[in-house]
Each structure stands twice: as structure tokens, then as C-alpha cells.
Image (cartoon, rainbow, N blue to C red; front, side, top):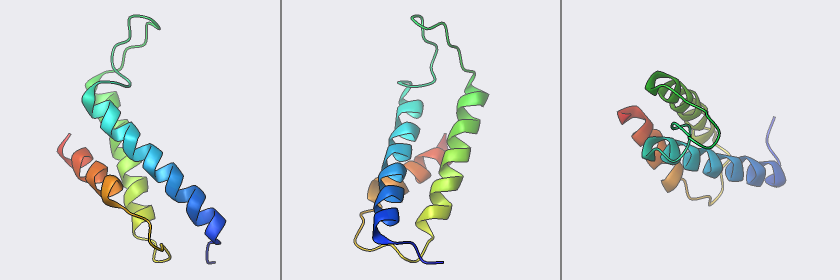
Length: 84
């Protein structure tokens, strides 16, 4: 089933957000030890989150119905996730 343009736009926006999540986790800006909230995430937990997110992004990038969406940030996040 082909996606409609509205769904493609929604999916793309979500992917850009997920790419930002990967970047933030790697930079230590998200899922890091947080003194304010008391949250603590191990490196293994952060890595698992990044791997799941990158896997989803890889699947989505492979869809053949993208128009002119720029996948540069998404592909960079996938690549960075592989090195984390």
C-alpha cells in the first residue's frame, strides 16, 4: 500500500526527530544521568535505544516512495549509531 503525501511528511518529520534523539543520546544530552530527575541510564541501555531507533530509521529510509526529502541528517544518525 502506497503512502499518501501527508503520511510521508509525517513519517519524515518523525524520522528527523529520531535522528535528533540519536545525536542527543550520543552527545550525552538525553538519557544521561540526570541529577534533577534522578534518572540514570547505563551505556548498555543507551546503546540499545540507539540501535532500535537506527534500525527503524534504516527500514524507513529504504522505502521507495520518498520524494525530495533530504535524508542527510537521518543517514548521518544511522552511521553515528553504528559507531556508538
